[in-house]
Length: 337
Image 1 (tube, rainbow, N blue to C red):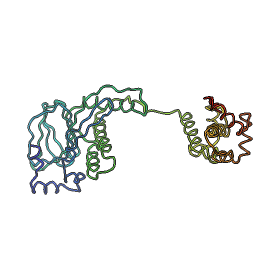
Image 2: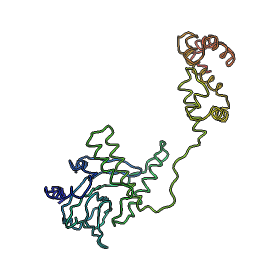
Image 3: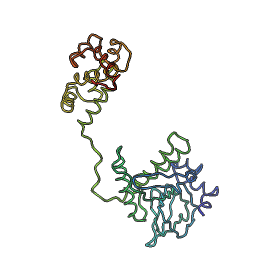
Image 4: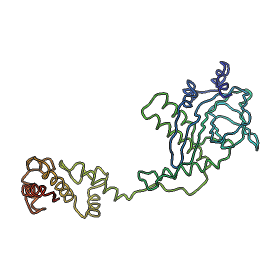
């Protein structure tokens, strides 16, 4: 029956085109069931999601799909035309810009208008609870779990009555289709995100809770300290200033110095010098380069300046340190800086 509904005669197509204005979803008319042919499933939070159908369908005027139901979720969006949805508790008009959710187990009948054809974007999904993942994992997975749980819980309680697509969920059908059509790099990820957006924007229409989980936040001083020290480690081998590192964080040098005082109990120059020496100790132990070359490669202006700093910090010259390391390495012992 669905196949017959898609096979429109020329007169029906012309009638649809006369409904006024460019049709946003016209690109999907080329292969309206293209996404149905893809076997796509993915994990979202605690749920496995499999796409059963994701297509554009066109019903001729007066076409009726008799009462039926599904054991899974079916989302219907009306981008153009009008019709009627009949549920057990009554009949509801459909028009462009509306959506409704049938399933699981919602008995319904669909009818296109008697004088006007109707388009429908249909998303049919299996949403299956999975074994709980390790919620101690990093990289933000816990926040995805929270949002997925809240969304699926909201969808499970939604009424089937048609409402307006206030958050433009239907536009994501086109995003998914174009990712497939253009064969874009990362098409699977784009389609996955499109489906998730449809779910979230659908659930948001009837979401009534006033207590939203807060998004994850950072201790900004700790975060800036981590960024600053990483920047120093990445760039220590060249001339580096407090102002350059501060600018990379979009803060002033004074603020960065306070952060280093708080977390490292050191000045910027002290921290930089200590890190350079730590790296240089490794090079002295394992490299055959001259002291002059090592000084240049680790951010020191000259071998003589390195000699001064090294002796001041470690109580010996770089050459003495290298000699001692060569002796102790033979005995299987390494003396770090």
